[in-house]
Image (cartoon, rainbow, N blue to C red):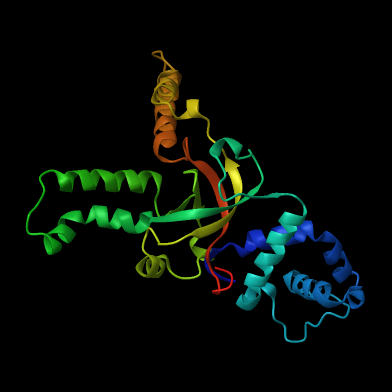
Length: 278
């Protein structure tokens, strides 16, 4: 099987390996790696490259290639990290995971359809909708230009240049999280150009569960109540009320709400299998 990564947060991968493979790290630091054999030796060599400083022992550093500089090792490091989570019982792998079974914390590997939203590009399109529409359409829809201007303001206020990915599994459970541009394998425009915003086929995401919003948190009445919970005529109370209103808008637009599950993506990829595996 081959993993076609479009996103890999190598910093999170490094953190997982460093914390869950502490024993091997200590061996490398103490120069005991000459005792390792086979796969263990490969893991030791990888961990040695992970370290920010050169260490003594049998591990070769003569070429001066650091882990962060070697893209070749990133994919292997991902598998080491994934197996480490698996071995420690920290990884939940369930293709048919129901939302009610999602734990409050931990790591999850989910499969399903994907959607990628690049808000930087969407904001630019919305802000220049009239000009773009004039190029591609002879018939102008009334009021659409104003709506797009308003949408541009919303995106600029709450999303800025963020990228969001959503993986929806077979049970309809939606896992949503932000993608850092620095960890994308290619520029986001190139990725969307090749795969589209809703890429075909099954996609896999390894992620850290951040929050599982409750149903009552999503009710509009609860948001309105928060916006109106401070009343009175003093300057302090009025400022509190204004702040409550802003927090209400932030909850509506700027955070994950029920029934979605908020996650911190570590990797997003599709699996390419041979005929025997498929």
